[in-house]
Length: 171
Figure 1 (cartoon, rainbow, N blue to C red):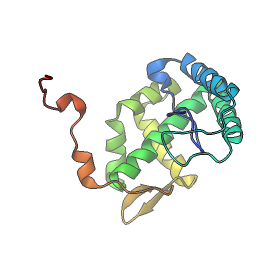
Figure 2 (figure 1 turned 120 degrees about the vertical axis):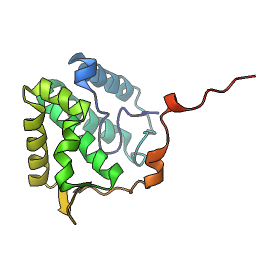
Figure 3 (figure 1 turned 135 degrees about the vertical axis):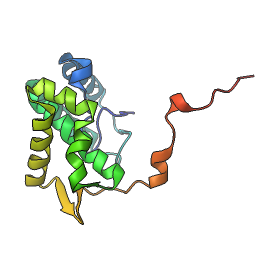
Figure 4 (figure 1 turned 45 degrees about the vertical axis):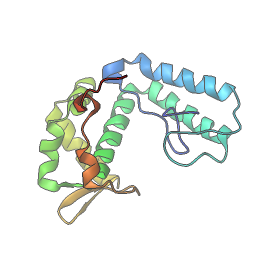
């Protein structure tokens, strides 16, 4: 069971702002330890079960090594992923609300600090590079993630966080 360590198409994201630069090295070492077990089947938390576990580990190890070798690239990778997933979850964001949305995100502030930019400059650059690279599309006045995904229902976004769940007495 690989959990979030890897999938058929990606590796788990490591938050260098919270966990430090060594977190990417630790994630790489964890992947290597799992690969050394030579599993015949991988069960990731997301996506399809990889048809070829050896190839999936090879891809994941190369990606994880790049994140170790290029911490700035790792920060950019995380920012692009978080933003794309936010757009998927929200069904896109109106174009005129994207930058204010980004400016209010703690992860963007963390990424900007690690990259030596202001949050405003990073937000502008993030949107521009993702549009230019085809990761985002502008459709009907809303910015959307271009990757195929299953839309999230609006009611699923209204589920309270666990800390807001009512306390119950265990008997």
